[in-house]
Image (cartoon, rainbow, N blue to C red):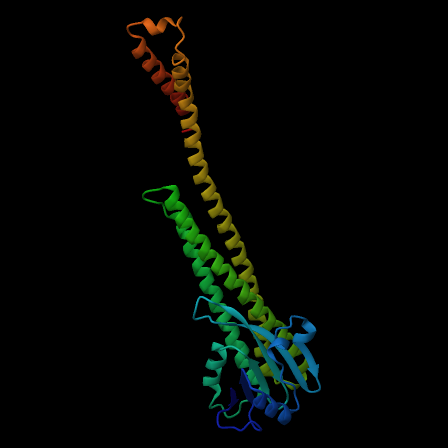
Length: 312
């Protein structure tokens, strides 16, 4: 699909041409009109810096992974190409990208649109959305921390506690995965901005240069924020794992005490169950109650000792 902006302009006079999953005819028309090469999806996926940022004549070829599918739980990185020339900005992508749709709606009636200003509008929207995604991840971590550190279970139990912590870890994992994708995207945008400023500064007016610099500063701030999120995620994951270990240790402690307390009465029963002829207790009238009392005392005394030691 080919869209040109401002809307109503032909491809020859447009300031921004957006190609979404273009066919060969659309690619050929744009290539012939502006003397550029439209990269395919495999080219956009290349991760080498030399492939993502390069100059060919008067055209800057740039690639960045943007985030698609943010309205669902299945986020993915969508390789996106930007070709900036003195006459036109051409964008190429093979997934639906919300920033492109929003910026297209905002710019369709802008009569003085230029290729650099169209690129700026796209990058500003992408960075704003990155900030929103990181703030959402921060909110998820705040809720996880509240549940993990400040809320007490009314009826504590290993199964209930494990279920709760499993849910917390899953939410933190999703937040971590999304934050890492967002960081990968905005760092790529930051390299693009630096590339444009290095190559085009003499050709940009003061207002556009300041807006590009503002994007770069915003990305630096987002990078610092994402690093702090990473520290919070690691802390909470370690704490959640430690809480599970504590719960398991408590269960093991109870089982250990129960097994130790049960050993003496088993020994008593084993001794009196040997049935030798020369066992005087067997002929006692009170031999059976005596054996029961001995079993009881051999159980209670270790239990009281564990209690006195504070192990239970």
